[in-house]
Structure formats: C-alpha cells, structure tokens
Image (tube, rainbow, N blue to C red; front, side, top):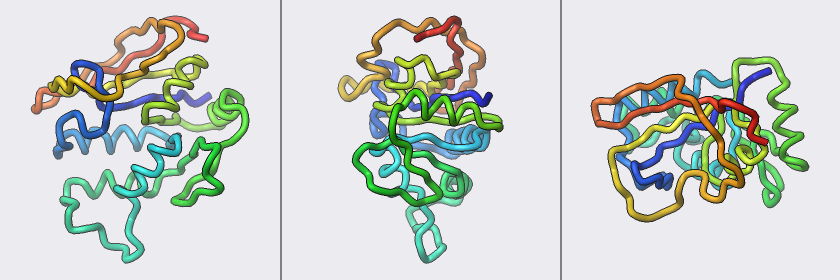
Length: 189
C-alpha cells in the first residue's frame, strides 16, 4: 500500500496561504523537487490543481517562461510530468496528465493507496482537511517559514478530531525555514 503524504508551506503562526511565507529559493525548490519525486502521483483539489497548472505547466511553445530561473526548472519539469488526480465536483474534465476523481472521497483515495508504488502526495488546504478527517493521511510534512502572517487560512482549520503525531524527520534550511515530517501515532478516524 502506498502512503499518502501531505506537504505544505506554513508560517510560524499557522497560515498556509501560498503567498504568506518566504518566496521560494533555490534550496527550498530543490527540496520540494525531491519530495515530488518521492511520489508516484499528486492528488489535488480543484483550486490547487488550477493554481499549480497556471504556474508550472510547460507552455505549448515548449519553452519555460522568462520569469522562471534555471533553479526552478527541475521543479517545474517534475510537477509538469507527474501523474495527477484531481478531486472536484465542479470540473467536467482535466488534462495536464490528470484524471478526475469523483464519488466517495474516502473510497476513491483508498483505491489509489492500494495501487502499487512508493507514495501519493497531496497539497493544498481543503482536500487535505477532508483526508485528515477521514484518517487517510499517513505522513504530514510542514515546511515552516520564519514568518508571522497574522492573517489568512490556517493549517487544517476545522479538523474534527485531534491527531497525535510523532516527529520522524527534520531538515533546516539556510533561510531559517524548517521542514518537519510527522506520522500519526494512532488511527485518526
């Protein structure tokens, strides 16, 4: 069974809006590239899928945009080429190497986890909350940014039950950010 990993950038005060932390740098982009490469497929909700697609899909010209630095291209190529599953009740179809996931969320994700491979990766805010409530997340990874945002959506806000975690890995960045990886210590659903 492949594990489901939830990974996200978060500020010290728990804000998980994608613009609230520090701008990505070469070190963090290398880290996120390696994390994406640890997954057989990415799982997105509609909002995250559309946001990631608008930023990281290879243009039809085949040439990455001028705003993208050389150090961002490995991440862009990794996410662009990755298999994706999109959970949405409003989209009628998806592309960008993606399949639409509909129906019972728990059953659909359980089926994906049962497939052979090394893991699934989920990002975003709303979908991971639903998955955490269902007890389907096997690993939580937070890249904690040394910033206090003071506002914005917070990490797993509205979680129905407390989830006890144990620290399994820690990585410090030159920027002061810290990646913390946790696993649930008991069943959460």
